[in-house]
Image 1 (cartoon, rainbow, N blue to C red):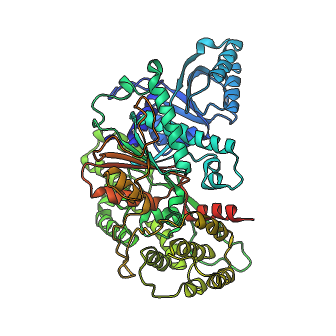
Image 2 (cartoon, helix red, strand yellow):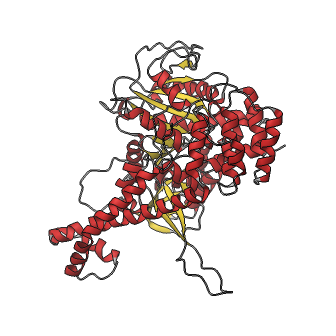
Image 3 (tube, one colour):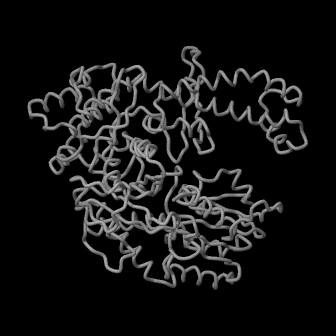
Length: 611
């Protein structure tokens, strides 16, 4: 795991785009020009990892969706990257019959079945295109990497594996099997790409246990099939791993329903909570100036802007886990240091005869920097710095508007106190009834956290009072009826809190381990703890599986993957990252079946709570 999963998945994609041959470093020759045909699943896997420019550098002149109208380009090879679904296979067969491309490199995100492979073979024979189907590959890349240490199973059709889907009261056994198989298929792909066989631990009697049993079986079967095993020889790559295998901890979302509802105070988690942020891209609505329109005129249209927050953005990498006030301060500092260099930018532009913001002209020049003076080479760097400052000024301003208009700092601090059992300086009823603080959803989130974290369930009389206040504030009570049923099942361990607060204006975060982090710590460090002592233990390399809770391996683990069945969030991810910072030489990855913010989670709870 020393090489992060992000790097491994990127390497696998680049090899695929190079016709499944590892690209040669520093080859000066032109790449082979080709088109990339993907479905929405393929698009979601590629877009957080490879930019359009990187695709172009690899010879991809066009990237098109499989089910869009595509013209024939008969003298160009096509690389396909799609799920092996019925409708995708039909469309690929149609492409063969229509002779759209010179040759076809068919890559399946997940393994294709024998019968579907035969369908393609028959179509190729019928279309007289057998020689043009150059390669067919199973890529085992059915998961989305968002960070070096974070992945999520899917973005398309995520409602099929959502918290709601798993926890529906009327779910049938067959439906549950299908959900578990979908999750296991992706986790299997993850470990093939990682090139490691994990030791698996999971809680009993939960969906996480069903995933563990199936994953153990799938890994075991693959290892036994020596001729076709995906975990031998070159895929493992010599010297890539420490000798110790990684630990996979499978936890169920139901062990902690408070954290996904929690208001947060760190940059990335706030962006995800209050803005439209998914697959590392944030979409903002920019108001076009404050000048008022003349009476009766149409209000000005809002500009929509989207920004990619990626690993190459140094500001984001440094500050995504920082408390928001620190981020605001850092943006300000960056801006000031840029202003000091702005005169230099103007001077350089005038030397080069570039007026205004003609970025195109500058990028053309930056491609030929060797021919220009060193002054020129510093210009693209300065402009990139300016671009990032503008980006984070816009994003941070948008976040700040939400914090101010909804008093999110007040909510965050109040929830912290509830979750860490500190004394409250204001009654919960007052918070709910304050018309100036928060949206109805903010109030509902706060109340649910209180309800989940209370040592005793509030009395019926108190509950009625709260419900009236919530309804007066415009809240939908459906999530509460679900949480009430859920609470009966699990009056257990929701006491964890992420931060303890001091002072309001610049809230100081103290490292408090959330439930998911605590569980990982127990299992990774081999600590005995009632919370995790009965977690099941699976080792797919052992000849026979056993229903044991006794780990064979007594040494602490260096590398671990925490995977939340039923959905995860950036608060938990950040908490794990902060935990591991204090542990030298240890690596932790966070994964989840879907990534949701509180709004999306509350919506699922509402649907479950509706009678």
